[in-house]
Image 1 (cartoon, rainbow, N blue to C red):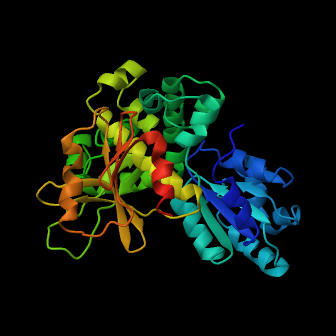
Image 2: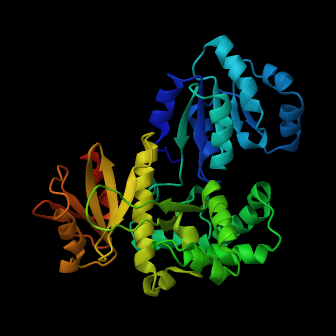
Image 3: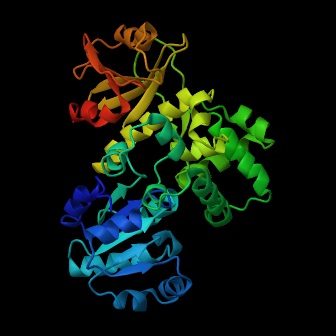
Length: 389
């Protein structure tokens, strides 16, 4: 079993808070994480109809059966339960009582914020990171990672990625989607998600997206919010600062798992990845998510933005570090070229001080430093970020 990088921080938080809440996509490993870190704690899955009915119909009786606390899986299925947990933890004043998990971030967060504000720590667990995969499974080929994605079951059970991701998507549409929203035409929604995959790494244009899907701008916005709530898509917000340049104000669109994006693009094997016109976008998606996982696995919040001005100068990622940023350019090519640095040089004219230097993450294997620009591959992302924290 893979020891998740977030485990140490999870243990630490249970010494400080009576409740720890873990959110993340379905099958990202939340249950396995909680059980492995707390093997002696009672476990209850609220997806099970009898457990859910008991927790919903008689929450006091349900909680009386677990006086020492428990791991409560998929807490959003019993949204009133945190209100009763609040009374228990306030009375007992004991840390580490409850571990709550949920796969619908907005519903879980709203319920927690209303009932357990100040009493729970919040963690986000995404699928495997590259370091979590590289050591136990020995996968060092980028195209393999772009095809497989990072969901743990694909690696643990040696599943065919195309079949596994097809099943994942169908299950999501048939189960999670129906819990979040009523969609009359599922095929239109599926088309919408595939159109989102075709726009990874691009500026989000809701009008264009809605038109291509045959839905209104309002519906496109609503569906995108649902995809965010269930950890399918991620919006990277633009960087804003007090400078004279006109900056793009719309976010860029990514998927929480690059393998799912590849599946939705019709990629069925590694050879399809190698020649796909969006391979560079997929690689950029992988890098953005790896940096986000690095943050989340330390219990930190999203601090990522991108920069693009009206003249087309762009930096793929600005990693916030207090009052400063670490600019990171992402290039899928295996050969370092002069245009790798164009956006970084343009940003120097606006921001003079980069105390953490600059970085290019590319698809090659050779690593070097040019002036204050470190050029590394995707497997060295933690090394770049460790220097900032």
